[in-house]
Length: 131
Image (cartoon, rainbow, N blue to C red):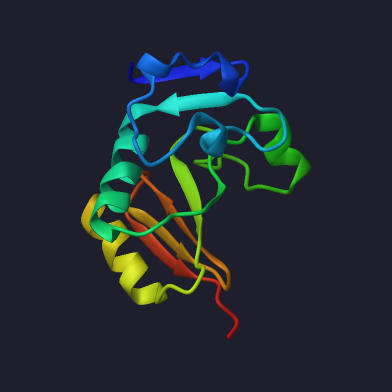
């Protein structure tokens, strides 16, 4: 399974889900329940989680085009392609988390006040932190 779209995350058979630290509902669109499984992106997320050895709370993963538009997401967002994750900072050191995400293979990293965006698009890094 390289990329597969489910109309709802509950349609994913247990034997088809291979990412031990995440569940389909965590990765599904928060607005519609749809799930686009991008195996490469999820493998990278699982690698990051294995390296980090602590909880990741996923604020946003896949977004349906409709939900992405409704929340003001970027046109062409990697979330719509199932290639991006927003990971809550919790009490983590942002530099340590970013380093971990880069070592796992994420190539797009955005620093925000309360989360870090990670995707497998082209190499780039940006900072939107205000404090």
